[in-house]
Length: 210
Ligand code: AP5
Ligand code: MG
Image 1: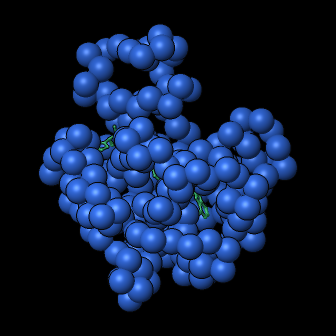
Image 2: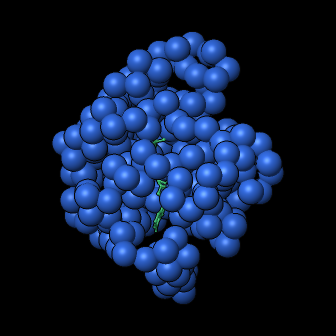
């Protein structure tokens, strides 16, 4: 099955994608992660993407759509895939429908008041683990692999403000896009632990698979 994970910055898309990948074997494709790897590698795509990401704006559609299309056409998807951070506007959603079949859109809904703290308090590890400062008790290394933790460059209040505005104006309308196609399921991502949110998402996926 093929899933789109929709949700504002900090809603928990990446957190839930890891849990879904472990349980259901779906391939996790995150456009933000792909862009960050390109920035780190100094590629032309990375150089182009950086200024948009730093400003909290969307990387141009032609670049992003081509990247995802290429990944899906050339990838071995096995049980299916899960898109995290794509599509992010109506144009991308329409393009996606031309080159892939989407079965379900899981929309992780979190009150805006929680998002700034979640994102600005996030600390990442290069192994993919992510933490919130409030649970680290001053630790600066990853509990899973021991490497130093870091903060994403776009996880500062100014850029997060712009990312939230971009989400509200360009991405949130996709709820209606998938609702109109009978594919939208909204789950509450703001009042439970990641495991509790995952239990709800699992029940949604299990129901679909029956
Ligand atoms: P991207 O990397 O996709 O970032 P984002 O959408 O802003 O989302 P985040 O990764 O910040 O949050 P998340 O929902 O994954 O939350 P997480 O699980 O980490 O995109 C970055 C940039 O790339 C964009 O701004 C844009 O410039 C560009 N880009 C990407 N895709 C593009 C596209 N399609 N088109 C054009 N440009 C594109 O969780 C957040 C925090 O909350 C963590 O600390 C976590 O531990 C914590 N948390 C998670 N769940 C819970 C819970 N239930 N309770 C408490 N804390 C929780
Ligand atoms: Mg993410």
